[in-house]
Image 1 (spheres, rainbow, N blue to C red):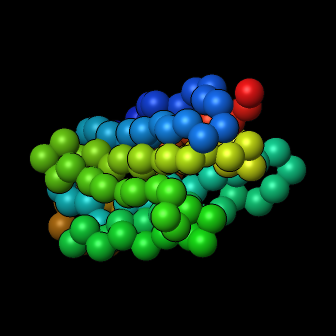
Image 2 (cartoon, helix red, strand yellow):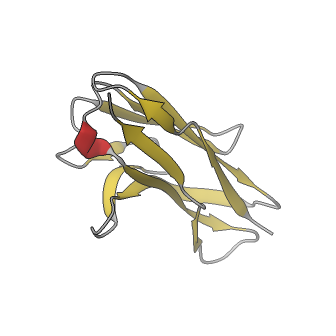
Length: 120
């Protein structure tokens, strides 16, 4: 059973930083693209950043210059370092990954979400 386990959310003051982690657990054969999404109250879920299987990152405009996505292949983990946080960054952040447990098509998985609140 593959799971994405997120951690690192919390309450932070404007201008502060947080580092989110998402570990893929279970019997994993390979992992493709990994990504972070967020969903603020009353809004649609949106992409924050994505990192390819080869390690190439891509960022949403809202995250460019303030966030860094990275991955640890040995730990099957993806990270999101967020700096200069703003109140509008407040949302539930979700990890997403394409994973397969045997050779063949990758399946899409979501984490349970971690709350990030930016407030003074």
